Amino acid sequence: MCLTKLILVVLKKEKAAIIIYLLNTIVLVSFYYLIFNSREIIYPIAVSLFFLMIFIIYKTIEYNNFYISLDEAKISPNYKGKFDNNVGVFEVINEIHDNYINKFYKMKNRIKERDTLMAQWVHNMKTSITVIDLASEKGLNHYKRCRNIDGVSSEIPLKNLENSDFLYDILEENKKLQDNLEETLNLFRLDEFAKDYIPEKVNLRELVNSAVNNKKREFIYSKVFPKVIIDEKYYIYTDKKWSKYMLEQIITNAIKYSEKENSYVTFSLVEEDNYITLFVEDKGVGIRKEDISRVFQAFFTGTNGRNNRKSSGIGLYMVKLVADELGHKIHIKSRVGKGTIVEISYLSKL
Image: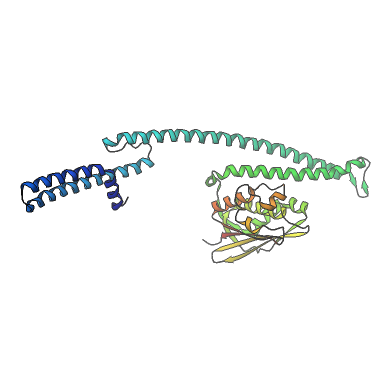
């Protein structure tokens, strides 16, 4: 606290004592004036003002030390204070600290237990998803083995041929469920991001191709095609796993909102100074101008999301969280009916 502000605090807090002291001084000086001549009153006035200044300086130092102690008490819950006349204040502060810490740790343990149970549930669900995936693949393989070049063998009734389409649908929906569960686990991992963060030099083309390959089914199912216009010479500094996760979320959105079949999701880049900016462009429905500033908010789906039941409002929120943790800049440009461009800036040189 600055000196001027501290003196004003002292004058305000000790106002009653100062007023009483001044009134007492006035009475004494008046009495002195009646007994002696006017020249003699200068001495008692000077003495009174001197002691008043001593009092104000003493109180200023005392209040300054008290505020310093309060600042220290904010940091340390076990701080006991330095002054006997303020023991009560610090006892209250310690009691508040103790109550706060107890509630904090109870809440923290409760959240940790909930997260542990939730993570275990997700892992159990992933086991079931793996079984469904294997069963569906087994059914499709059996179907393929029982077909001949001319058509269908006698081993499979004609009506069962349609089941292959259902199996493909099951595989597709099962993959979406698996992605959603993985997204849930990533939410938990973000709480301890530093433990799961490995910065390294990564080839950008390989990173993009890996993310595209992971979304191969979605591309094929939606009849949307990737176009990677990136040379192999470009490298970025990032965490490979988390950056791949970011790209997968962006690709999922690009496919989901592609308006026409046989359209493209294009990947290109621009290198400038020590940064490489990756552009992910789709020819989809686009985002309204009033929605762009809110697309990174949790659970915000916007006009497009309300028209698309598959939207959860989590994907871009997670992308923004991860980008901030990695130190990457992300920006979105869009025009309704024209498409959307997502820009991600990576550090390319240290």
